[in-house]
Length: 181
Image 1 (tube, rainbow, N blue to C red):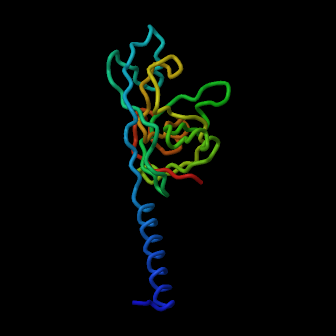
Image 2: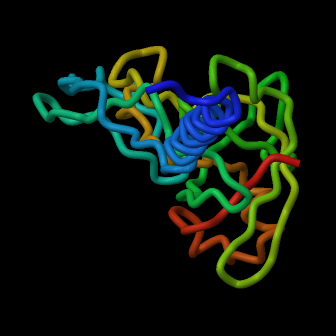
Image 3: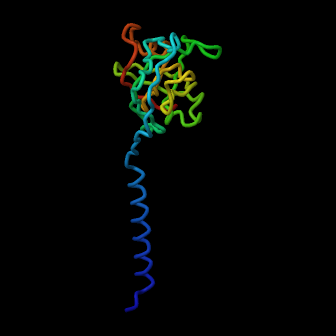
């Protein structure tokens, strides 16, 4: 049985269109970020764990989850805002600066970019990304003997918290959304 050129063209068009739609559907599904491994905690040497702003210290023998990825970035990416000191020769706690979890920091591609952070109270602030909150490693001298960051953290200076209107006694962990500007 012979098919006409028009029938063949319609068939090819239908197949190509269906293939493209399947590709778009696959891209639209949320990506999953699964743990990449575990890290065994080591006891920090005396007075070596940085506990500024009530940061956690690694616990000897405890297993910590590590991630090489973070949830997909959207117009309103859900995150946990944590408190961090940025006092060093480059920045101060009075600056609106943040560190992003490893997947979002994306091998420094996010460095020096501005993000908008919105808290549940409706207040927003613009901050500059200046560092990585390492989700892949921790419990060593380089990481101040602190555990790896979860994969959904925006680690913010006190100035960011203040701009969001969170009283200093309540600063620590807060559900927020953020996006790149």
